[in-house]
Length: 112
Length: 117
Image (cartoon, rainbow over all chains, first blue to last red; front, side):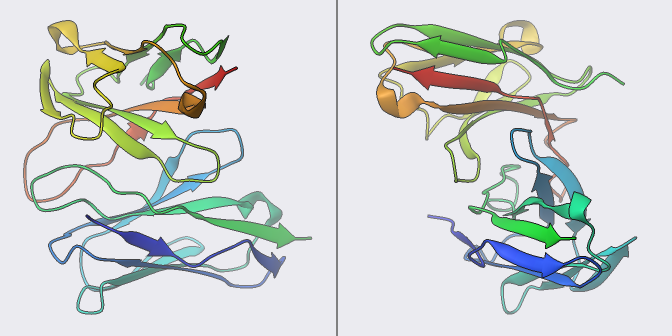
């Protein structure tokens, strides 16, 4: 059974602060990782993907991947109230399966 | 580019009734997924199609759920008979193809909210 664990929320940060979201996974074969954002009542939308160890930056978002530790994180710099949403970590279920196993998500609230 | 379309957006039924959901993926996308998302949980994969063939339906409760993707384009998911615990959002997603080393991005539709009374 592939498992994905995300830090329990809700996570509250003040506007302008850095929000740190964490995710650990059990499947050592996972090659790529996705972070999806889901606003309340909406469907998930992709915000970041990362395939290699290290950091990947896209605007205010930085994804960090450590395959040896089976750990991936998402940092949101200069958090804005519009970042308030649930963030879902999604490593694939295994090489060649082309399926995603989603974590329960971490709910982020950015306080103005 | 049009996104993934789903209908209906909302459905309320009584337990033991049947219900069907429809999904039209992004044009040209070979792979289609149906997910169930219960409140407070992440999406759970129910079934994956590659063109018009089933790749994985291991988590589909086959005693009551069925799905098809005729002609490899749009798809329907049916529940018959519905139970209270089927109340959830049913999400359809598509991706261009299943091939290569890396998982491709999945694009989600708006979902169908089902309430079983």
